[in-house]
Amino acid sequence: MNDKPNFLIFFTDQQRWDTLGINGCAENLTPHFDRLARQGTFFKQAVSPQPVCGPCRSCLQTGQYANFTGNWRNGAGLNPDAPHLAELFKAEGYRTSYMGKWHLSAGTGPAAVPVENRGGYEDWLAANAIEGVSGPYSSVLWNEQNEEVRLPGYRVDAQTDAMIRYLKDRSEESAEEARPFLLMNSYLEPHHQNTDNSYPAPKGMERTYQGCPLPPDLQMLEGSSAPADWAGYCAMIKRLDEALGRTMDVLTSTGLGKNTVVVFMSDHGCHFYTRNGEYKRSPHESSVRIPFAFWGGDWDGGGERNEAVSLLDFLPSLLDTAGISIPESLHGRSLLPLTRNEKAGWPEASLIQFGDNSMSPGRAIRTQRWKYAVTASDEYKNRGDAPEYIETHLYDLQTDPYELKNIITSEVHAEVKAGLKKQLAELMAEAKEAPAVIVDSPMVPFGQRRVEYPNSQR
Image (cartoon, rainbow, N blue to C red; front, side):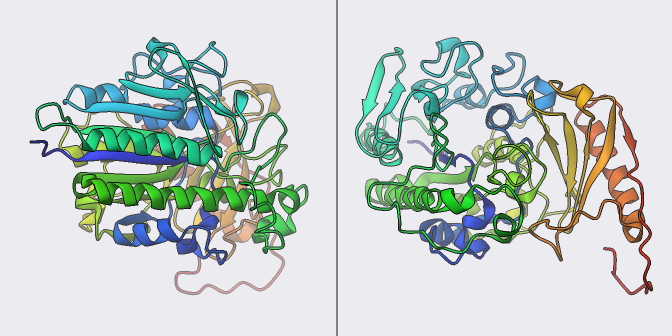
């Protein structure tokens, strides 16, 4: 009899943190997620370690920073010398399965992925870049033999149907043939459709969310494409949440839910052209803060956690849950102790690496209150790191959660900035980054009366 937990990873692409009802969204886009996150453990302050599709996915599959493995840009394949999630679990008797968008096969195009580029997964129904080979009603994936498989229906539903068939098959296995499984289902939605830069809603839902209030950053910052795209984006998220509800119903009806841990996460957010010339690749909350929750088994009842958490903690958390030794080479740490309120020694901040071949590299640190970022000059474009960075961003997330006022030059915050600069340098060293100079930004005098009061800068 199988006494190890199964794992099902429900993985969305480019989903903002503030689309969740549990985070205050009033449009009821995520009732299933909200209910399940409250049942399990919800990491409210979770961030992506690298807000670009390929680099973040490498962090999930290896448990190591993207810059460390050489995956700091889209188009790079998984480092063969890094730990691989599927191989770690397969060595412990798990059946490892992958569906959907991969984005980690170098030099092979958007379609089929060669066996050697699949990170060790046993079952396969995926494409390297779904957005390059299918549309919202023409989902195409490739199986273990690299045979083309066309799935009927809206792409979210089609991929969910395939997952449901997989779960049914696992539930009908005999005790002799059954193995614990780990299934990662990686959706494209609510990522834009690259072929025409659109956010295609399911049929009949094109106008459902028209007129819904935009988040403050998308209302107030220049360049936003959200007035045109927000309705489709919300409709995709609603359909994803419905798919989550369907999936949980299947786990219940098959009995698999009794021994399955479900993880819901996204790789990064979406700022709709407000922070640079596209949708992500910036250190802002709209780009890096993401949905992240576990439920089932030991994760139930963990509550809402506000610690500094990164998707780098995903792999060690899975290993810990399964009772598998965590390799010392992983850069993250298991989140499971936090469900027992064991947080001694937990870091105060998360490290974020941003930038890729389209822009200069940068680094950021995020605490519960502060966001501090540094960026290299244009001469270091198309590099993963730089010998010198310049202070470019400081935000007080307590009073300015949508980061509408950059206070990097504020003389009043000089002490805060100096402390964050020191913390950032320490985190970069822990991530095995080469030493780099951080150049202070010029300071602008405050010019008003200053009063010190308890906790004013904490």
